[in-house]
Length: 173
Image (cartoon, rainbow, N blue to C red; front, side, top):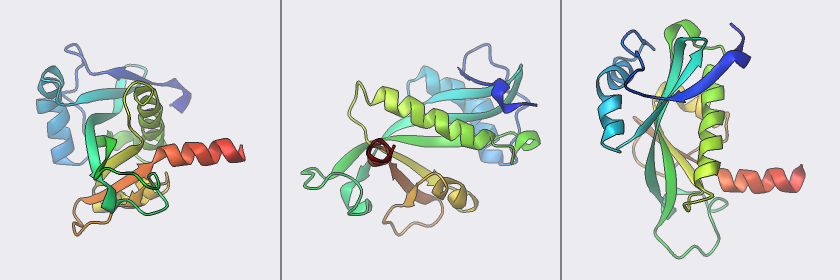
């Protein structure tokens, strides 16, 4: 199926997620059993990735913050006087088993970046965070995520100072 047919829609009561499977029980269980309730309680927001009428992936976003000490000196803002940076967290991101390794995860992460940029026009936010499964660290690193300074290794706390990336892109491009 062509990826140009990929579209993103918010989870709704009409979304049939009952057959989604990505191969990780905790991610499948969240989508099928908890995502709608969390969304109704305003604890998270889930977007579904569709090709035609088939759900091929999903991601869930929440607000977050990251301790300024966990961010590399070249990231963040020099002289920032506060202990934490405001952030958007990729709480969950999964591609269906059938569609893994086809670029859908990359497109979902681009959509996360787009949504984060839109939100940051209204609410201060310059960092995207994720607690990555160890096997997913390389995926996030390819997009510019870095390991946060932390003692934890499972999940692996990671972040991206997307504002810095936008500035670099503006200056170079």
